[in-house]
Length: 370
Ligand SMILES: Cc1cc2nc3c(=O)[nH]c(=O)nc-3n(C[C@H](O)[C@H](O)[C@H](O)COP(=O)(O)O)c2cc1C
Image (cartoon, rainbow, N blue to C red):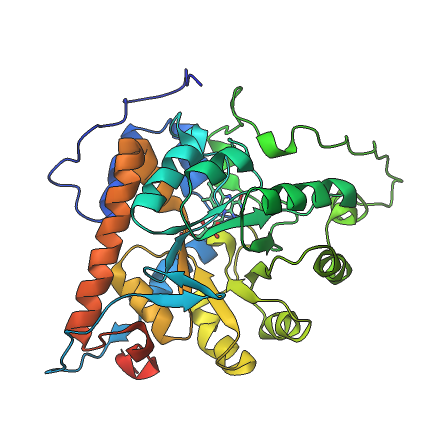
């Protein structure tokens, strides 16, 4: 696929001053056209939630223990019944050919080399089957439920056949947030980039509204899933189901009580409803509500090994990484993604060693300063 809108060509070696995840964000605007950069980096409305994702992490501090023997340490863990080399996975991120022609295929190869789980988006620019051939494990599929149950089921069957082992159903983006930054930049999905998995989706019936009806409530929201659809999905597939995009403790409790496998605590990178708390704000309360055994993942603002550490300390079993994978892909293709993942893995190891918490199980709330 050619990208007529590309800026600088991706690098094929890593510059010496590119040493942190934030450095990729610093480099990215040279490699990503302005409107696309604004779409990726931006959040909803006034970006209060987007900013909160970082400040909530920055406000936490680690309280290290000294003189701990860490020689048997490591970052291995188990999440949703699957072994992870480290408690970090690549979040589902749509349309990755926006930033590099290899798109999700490059990301998947890098993740596989770094033994990092990847969650392929329904809205990926390569088919879920092609991505699956490049992915190592864990290999999970993010599902946006469609208006047609038959079409949704078709996606699920394809994911099962392609070897995905978990279904992550995103529930916090039934419609786009008010994305003013992307609007101001005139962002539109460029020709040549499409949601290939949805190519054969049946057209939505044309809607007309009475004067007292709303395009939001009677229009868009009439097409989006509810808890009934989740119960239906549970009947239809034996893949474990996780809900992505929960914030309210009562919703997470309900997910647990109806037998779902886990939840991703997330505000969608601050891109949907503005003025909500960050996942890290809610994690302790949610962990307390659902108990120790329900799988909780989180995302939003993760950029450092210390961030992963803080999330684990507050009750997450693993974290997801969103925007940085696009920045790294744009700057240096799969080499960039692999390098960025390696930076994070090493930072987590250094953090654990310096904090005197040699294993993931050792990272408890006591490891943070209150
Ligand atoms: C450009 C972009 C596209 C995204 N596409 C999806 C998607 O297709 N499905 C989904 O569940 N979440 C999607 N997300 C949200 C991410 O999965 C994740 O929740 C968020 O990016 C985490 O925040 P972070 O970017 O600060 O790491 C997207 C995020 C971005 C920035």
